[in-house]
Amino acid sequence: MRRVLICAVTLGFALAAGGCGVPQEEHDQVVKDLDACKKNLADAKSNAESERNKLQSQVDELAKKKDALLKAMGASKKELEALRAAQAAAEKRAAVYKQLMAKLQSMIDSGKLKVEIRKGRMVVKLSDKILFDPGKTALKAEGAKALQELAAVLKDIGQRDFLVAGHTDDRPIKTKTFKSNWELSAARAVEVVKFLQKEGVDPKHLSAAGYSEYDPVGDNADEEGRRTNRRIEVVLMPNIEELPNLDNLTAGQ
Image (tube, rainbow, N blue to C red; front, side, top):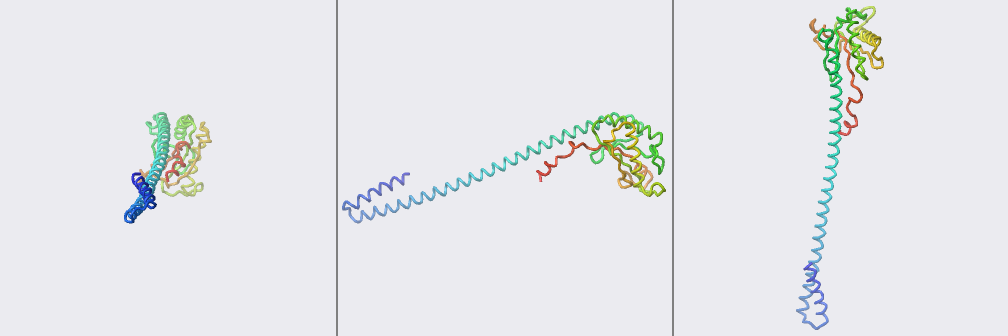
């Protein structure tokens, strides 16, 4: 601003000097000073434009950082909500497991069945020895009694699906009725499903599957391992609200 005032005074003086008979030397100096003022004005304008552009660039960069921060905060909020939902589902599932364990404790203590958590699911495991004779699908009296006790518990669990899974060891079977362990394991699972239905478990929540020898829990190289592999399992399937939110999984990718 000071330079602008000086230049304005100089310009006025130069105009006056031109019409008042001022000596040439003095006139030339005034013109020179005027040119210098014009250059200073041009430089000042250029510097101001440069500073303005620099400040605008800083403002734009800060705006980008703000947007990125807000986006990150939004993602963190979604992740936190997803974690809270997962924790609530896990607590609900744990409560069901605890309830079932308490009701089955007497059967566990008597050795009629075992309960374990496998692949994130609660599994009620019954030995084929208590349920069936070798190579047969007709329920033994002892097995039917055990399933009656189990059915009384399952039907009170609520809206929960159960998968009854038949398993065998790896020794092949080939009879007139069953050509392989696939047929035997599936037929035994269906027999148990039908019995549970008869005992009051809602068939809408029952399904059957045969796994043959392909989901072992023991080593088929010895008799003890083969014995543990010959079994019927009742798997508590997760409800839809207990499954991960696919929208959240996709958003995180």
